[in-house]
Image (cartoon, helix red, strand yellow):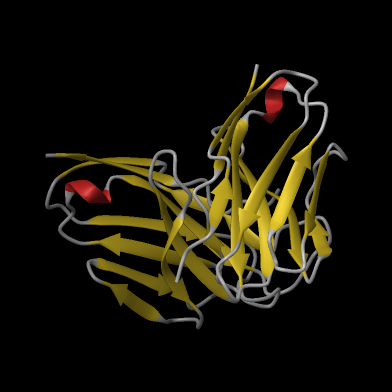
Length: 115
Length: 113
């Protein structure tokens, strides 16, 4: 299926550091979503972005919807141990292509934090 | 408000068997989507249901099927299980097919031996 280009694939940081990850695509999306997944659990929605250029925060998390509508980034400030997990971006096409998912996912960024 | 629930959480089956997974969406949500998640392929879309009708289907063989009930609960069935069907199966609910936000359940971990 379709995929977004999400980078980096993995990050190893020290507790307290800031984190930045991004997603790019050749397709235009009308919504960007960021999810976090803990081992053995389903993805949890962190932030939803609806307008190009939109910048939205959720606690220590900040995400932006790129002006071109083809990219988005997620920043985590002052990381803590519970931030460990896999972060997924997802772009919503806004229309149905038969046989294709309208919510397209990145491959994920695995975040590891050294205390 | 309770989140998306999926049962069972874990399943072990052998090749050739069939399996049925269940999903109850968030109260008031009428659209349910199913995904297969594997380390190599990531999140792959299986199908989406709304008002008891399948609205879209991903690129999976006919062994994978689903349905939705009048209370919006959904089930998916996999027949003639293969080793490659081992995966985390995730259900996501949304208000309706035009809603952009999907909320995931905890998943069912299926292991095929």
